[in-house]
Each structure stands twice: as C-alpha cells, then as structure tokens.
Length: 150
Image (cartoon, rainbow, N blue to C red; front, side):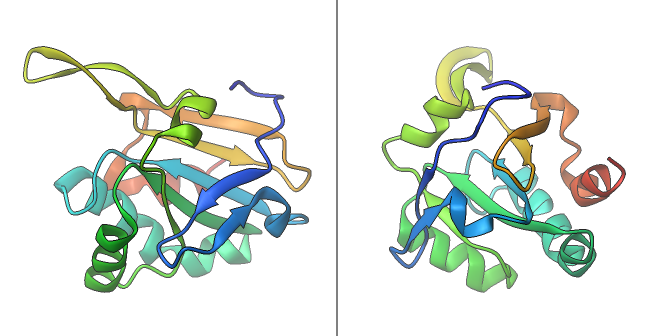
C-alpha cells in the first residue's frame, strides 16, 4: 500500500472477536499501526505513547487501532497490563499485514526472517492513506507526537 491508496474495508477481528471495519471510522482519521509483538520493549513503548496521548489524538480527529500477529488472548493481556484504550487486531494469519505491506523479510540478530515490519498508516476520513511511517522512521517512545506533528 502507498499514499493515495484506499485502505481495505475489513481490517480484522479485535481482542474480543469483534470485526473491525474501515467504515467504522468514517468521518475520523485512523492511525492504523502494525507492531511485531505484545509485551516487547519497543512495542510496549509505542503502545504507551499512543495511550498517553490518546486524548490529544482524539481531539485532533484520530482514532487508533493496533495490529499484530499475536492472538486475541495475548492482546487482552497486553491491553489490560498497559490500560490501552484502543482495539488491537489479532492478525494471526497476517492477512492484513501482508495486504498493507507490513509483513516481509527482516534481520533478526543477523538472520533473515519473515515478520512484521513496524509500520503506521495515517488514513483520512474517506479511507485513503495520507501518510506512512515505516521501520526505523517510527520513534516508538514519541510515536504519538510524530503523528500529532503531521
């Protein structure tokens, strides 16, 4: 996916098994962020940045949805532990990850592996991708501020 593309309508199922659709956010901007794994340092820092600035993001017209290949049960624990106020999609088979281009080859401790590429899509009120943060461009501890600065 690239800037100017329309995001897919079906985003997946959240931690409670509820289907999340792009049209659920019509009229609002969507921060759709993909992260590698629940309860790892970088992913926790990113989620907590978005949590700590959630009110500001909402006031600026944004909703937030996180996506990883972790299970719904893992997401429930992650959300509870860190009091995350937004849904987390359990993309176990990486359907959305692949569709959005957030799944691919990466280096893990010197080995090439397939996995989640940390990526955030800013999707406008009409469902069109306006901005993409990818890989090292995502500053996990200041990610909410990066988005609000756009």
